[in-house]
Every structure is written in C-alpha cells, then in structure tokens.
Length: 606
Image 1 (cartoon, rainbow, N blue to C red):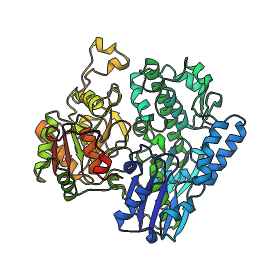
Image 2: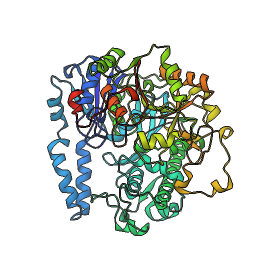
Image 3: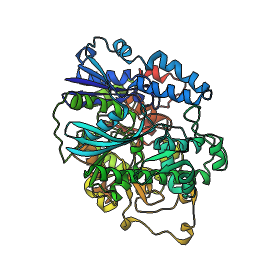
Image 4: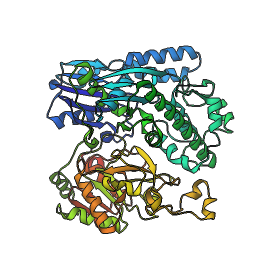
C-alpha cells in the first residue's frame, strides 16, 4: 500500500511517502527550489519521494492532503465578512490564489501526477499534526498536544493517541492563537513572520521580562487550564496585511522595528516577555492535558512545538514521564502526518510501537549522494579535492575542527525538518570563544546574537548538560552542567543586552547561550554512525565530545540539498573546508568563484 502525503499553499510545502506503514522518504520543496519556506505545490519533493521508492504516480494507492481547503476557505470568508469593509486589500490579495489553485487540489493532482488513479483524501490540519506526533513516536499510548498559528479553524488542540487511532478532546479556535501571538511579536520586533520566530526565541535571554505583565493583562487572558483568548483590538491579522495595529504600537511605546535596523534593548525585552508568556501557556496546557488524559507520555507537533525552550521546560517541570516531538513539527510535517493517518486510522492497520526508539529513522529521509556521484561532479568541473578512506575521514575532520577550522559536512540522506542533524551541517570547535562570532558573521551572514547548538555524544550528554535522556532532533533546551560553567565577575554580572554576548560562560562557550543554556542534539551510533564516529574521534583527541553543529546554509537560504548547493555555499562563505562523502576540499586550493558565471546552468541546477 503506497500513500503520498502532501502539504502546500501556506508555508513549508512538503511531500512524504509511506509504503506499507513505513516512512520511506520525505522532503521540503524549499530544498530543491532554493526558496526558503516555499509554499508552492511540492512537485520536486514529490518527484524525489517517488524516485526514492522506484515508483510513478500510477503506483500510488492514496494521496492525502494535510488539511481541508474548503473548510479553511470558509474560515477566511467568515472572517472577512465579519470585519467588512475592513480588510478589502487583504481580501483582494488572497482571493486569486484561492480561486485559481487552492480550492482545486484534486484537479491539480490529476494534472501533476500522470497515471494516478487512486483515491484523494483530506485530513484536518491539526489531525495531520497529531498524527505526525503520535504515530512515529515510541509510545503505544500517549497524549498529544498541537499548537500553531491556525489550521482550518483550530489553533491549539489536544487528545489521546492509542494504538492506531487519535481522538481529539479539546481545542482553541481562531482568531485566538498562541502561535499568532508569538508571530505578532516576531513582526513587531522586525523579523519575518513564519520564519523569524526562532530569532525571537534566541534573542529572549538578552532581555528582561518587563512587558510580561502587560501582555497578560492586555493581550491574552490565560486560564489555569491553559485555555486562552486574545484581545483582538490590538491585532490586525484577521483583516489586514500586518500582524499588529496602532493600538499595539501605543501599548508598547512605538512602531515596529524596521527590518535590518539595529536591535534595541526594547526588542530584547519584548522577546523575553513574549517567550515567558508562551512558556507559561505551554506549561499550564501540559498540566491540564495530563490531568484530563491521565497518560504519562506526551507527543508534540505544530509550529509552537519548535519552541525548544518551552519544550525543555515541559520535560523538566511538567507532569509527564517523557515527551516526543515531531522533528518537522511545522506544516512540512503535516505531509507525513497525513500519510500516516491514512495508513493507521483510515485504513485501520495495526500499529506496534517500540518503546526504545521512534519510527522516524533519525529524520534522515531526504536524498543521498554516493561517493561516485560526488567525485564525478567535482571531476567534471575541474574542482580539486582529496579522497579520504573511511578510516581517515573522521581522523582528518576531527583534526581540522580541533585546529578551529570551520568545516562544511555533507553526508548521507538529507534531514527532514528545519534542523541540520549531522547530514547537511556546518561544524566548528565548541571550545573556542571565537567560533560563534566567526560562523555567524563570516559564514552564516546572520545576526551576532544567534546561538549555536551543540552536537554531543549521546552517552556523554549528562556530563555536559542537565539532560538525562536522548535529544536527537535538537528540539530541547537544557542548562549547561554547572561543573563546566565559569562564574562571572561582578563587572560581567552588570552587563545586559548584547554586551553579554562576548562573556565566556563555560568550557564550551560557542554553544553556551547567555543564560547558560544550550539547544542540544544527542548523537547516536544507531541513527548516524559516521557522525557518531567523528564526535568520538574528536573526544579521543581533545577530551571533549561536543562540537558546534549549525545548518549548512547562509541567512535567507534553505539548507543545501545537493553537492552543487553545498559547493556554492562553501565558496560564497569563509568556510575553511568542505567534506562531501569521502571528498575533502580545501578552500585555498579552489578556483575563484566568479559571480558573473551562470552557476545554475553550469551546475545544471533546477
């Protein structure tokens, strides 16, 4: 039984293929088109999924779309009518997209997938999120919690996953949305909505929660059970083209920060304040879910589940024994959830969980390129490289990182989800105080305040972080262990804002945030043996089982997918070395990258 799941037309379009209940392939459209958060129909991701399994459209039994377009369209119509005549510009901008393609999914699939004669199904948006959270999880029975901007009408929901089914119990409906509240502050602090929310989370520790009470008093009414309502007089997203309005500006003392302008202390304080409010809602909701369901495990999905600071608090302070978070928690993961829902709940196939591991294979579900493919690409273009043996590879790369070189790491199947997990990564020395600023400013070309995540050997994690269980998907923040932290001087303690950035806080300063926390990825031999060997080799040479792992891309671009993408990113930044498969490239040996050359044509990029 071959089932293709699709998400499209909002943000992070994706496709996922499930064959006889097993996840075979998944990918986000942005990785092929190079348009970050691409929302268009995922034709490239679909093509990849089918090719990975050796299938054509004619071989598919079901295609399942991740939400119900007509129900979502009903919500838009009702919202516009309730605010009329306000919102005319927004209405005129939205309608052509809906009338031309968003309402015609079946017709579009018939056009794009030649030979397909199976059935087309539609799941609810939060049903897809819940399925993506529960069905791949290691639990036979668990509560689920989904929180995002908005699906059709639902913005927050929870319920129970048991065996091969999921049951929704309670929900919060549009326009009241924790995700949209966070996005409103993303917009107000000058970052891009549906893209910059993680920047707000990273900025929060530099600020003070001085606006928290004002948010709770004026913007959101949060009940003890985590249910909430927003005060809509401060928001413009129902009918306008922006997230907030003039009343919001008056409440916080000025207009939104202009994008790319200086980040001020007010922006940091706003970020800290909305982050703490978000965590409070997540914590209250988690406690309520445990009380209502009585279950000891929790599964999370939806865009808010990418708030790894909140996730860490639920794990440490919440009432659940353990939690599992879908690595592609946003809309991309909805494609996977739609396919899995069809297999388990709709077709009623039995499900047997493994309490030792999940069913997502480390989320390495994208395309891979073998050594022959990579060597042919380099040789055809006359690009110098050194070929390493399997034994040399971790030794050489560990030495380069220990020498504080920044290394592009391109290995195996590409990750599904927004995090690089040791397949399409940029690596650096976590022990160096300079690593963060070097990678941020000279390689990623992004804001200096952005923290980096550590990759740590799973077996060594408790020695460095207050985390006693695996975190393979980089979705949990935990404190750095006190044994490796340094105490700040009185003068350093008086610093605030971005002045805090350059204070060394631990033996691994490049991955220790200003609040002594880290967004942790534990690395395990079972899911990524080569990356695990690299970390173990680095530990043998330096005594430290931790390195910097950041996504292989520059600001504004998606993570690289192909050798062509990786080479161009390598050459357009100040990375020192690139390792693709067993091929090692030294920047100093490469020919000059001429920007007047049509690299897309030369490299045959789509």
